[in-house]
Length: 148
Image: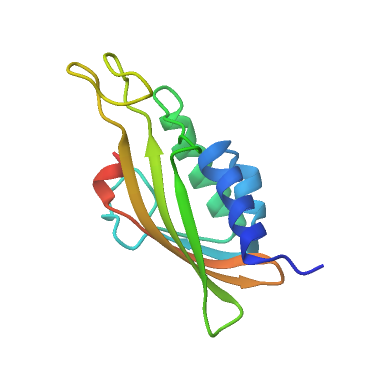
């Protein structure tokens, strides 16, 4: 059964950003799959380049463990994305705006107030190359300071 870009993307987001399940995330990739975050500095806590399911699983499990204490969860109702297909049927692009709620101390309806913290919007672009319904290469472009 052929998986659509929508299904592949939703599976990837669920495994990673929503559930932080490194095993499921790695399973979304081909055995030789590559994950790249080209804008990350080499010494960053977030991996810059991972090759193969095992390396993806191990590095992302370690990253998720470090983030567990103060880990933020995206607000799915406020967040959004658009998928763009390309002339190459094995490549699609995700344009994403992920919203993390502020503390809303003074605001109603999740808005920031005088003393409240504003929602944070993280915009990024991901380029997916797929093979046999799995991610063969993912390039994730976002501002590196957002991952500190």
